[in-house]
Amino acid sequence: MKIALASPPFPKSIEDGLYWFEKLLKEAAAQKAEIVCFPESYIPGLRGMGFEVEVHSPQKLEAALQKVCTMAKENSIAVILPMDWDHPDGVLNVAYVISNTGEVLGRQTKNQLSPPTEDELFIPGTERSIFEVNGIKFGITICHEGFRYPESVRWAARRDAKIVFHPHCTGSDTEGKKLTEWGHKDSPYYEKAIMMRAIENTIYFASCNYTMKYPESATSIIDPEGNCIAHQPYSEVGVLVADIDPGKATGLLAKRFRADLYTDY
Image (tube, rainbow, N blue to C red; front, top):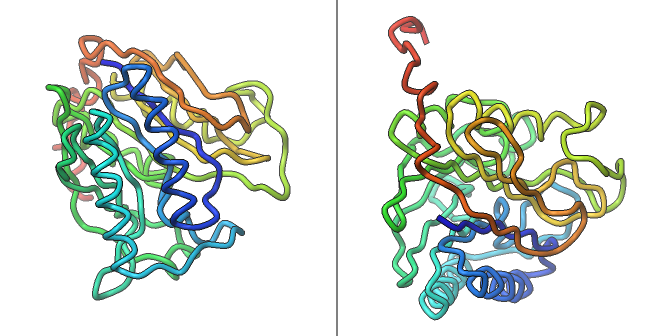
């Protein structure tokens, strides 16, 4: 299976986000990718990160979702669209999965928020889902969940997911350290964490970040042995495309997990 991860700039508005969405989606489709994933809350942009984010409405979000469905259909590529979504109790952080025919297959909510800052921005979701595109099962874990709550990834791996997609947002456009080497010992822990999510479950892990001047992690694809098989150059807008071999994603370590030993959870 050929997968793609998009690394767009932070959107200046919903329309700007849709411009970059279409541009990078088309690049992924031109390289024969079967599915493309974008970073966390890409429509309208992740709030609370020091960027100006357009105030949304349910109507604007619904219209954006429908436009992306049309893009997916016109370019025959499945899409993972992370976005805000209005709920009677607040705003959910979600990732919609759209087929290559433009059908919404479902969505994954961010269930484990990052306290205390995200508690002011989002309400937590409560369910987890497995998705399937072209016969390949996959899961989604959103940012903090995948970095600090490995249970969110193991849940999918134990249900035969061959890959878990990880839309996230780490870094800044105003301050920070320039990273030059993937997984360097002095870099933030994020790239080490995504390596562990793959190796501890024997699956692929596809982690997708915004393009920033000072990113704290690269958009990366990790194989079931924990090797980074591809990553987007730091601070470079583009699409990362790579072939994965689902046969290597056995989920062996995840399936050997003895849940009965932890009944006090």
